[in-house]
Length: 216
Ligand code: DC
Image (cartoon, rainbow, N blue to C red; front, top):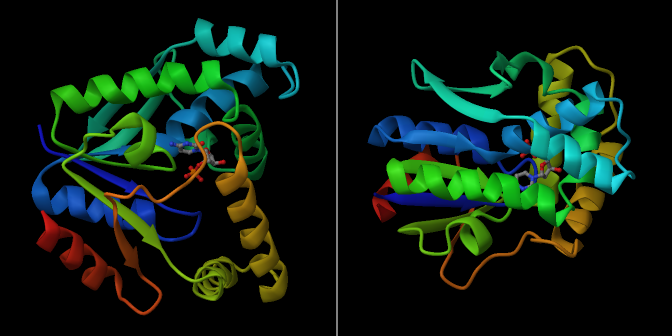
């Protein structure tokens, strides 16, 4: 199997790039963030708060997360239900970053991710793919962009959606999130020694995709 690991901070464009690279190569794209988000949704639905570690772990152990591919797109299921439409909001996002620090929670998903990688050619993105999930990946990319660039991209996205926002606040949020992701105790975001650094600050999406394909 050929496995490509893409890690990097929030807003670097990982999912956009990973999806396109996978499509070009005919590989599947595994979005690990959505797997963590699905377990967070299960906790919210069970009425458990993030601080109740034992209960969180119980809920995560008692539900089933599965991935399916419909026309090349990943569909994530919680006990068989397609929950793709329920996991991309603030409430779930906050719960996700809170429960993603628990080792037993990560273990459940890491095992699943490792199994998929033995069965399929894939592009997998997240924070700990090159370091923990697929340390022997054929290609590891650390995709980043400057804080200013990531803030501008996010600002543009929100303005297009008609959301009123302040670029300085967005920059501050990104800096805070980077700090949390890089300094947490369990599986922090780091660039492994064997990962290729791609800084997308001054590159178009196509240029980044082409660059990664050239390494393949
Ligand atoms: O990439 P995302 O925004 O969907 O990730 C949601 C959260 O899950 C984010 O707080 C980081 C966490 N996450 C993680 O800890 N490990 C991964 N492999 C993927 C995501």
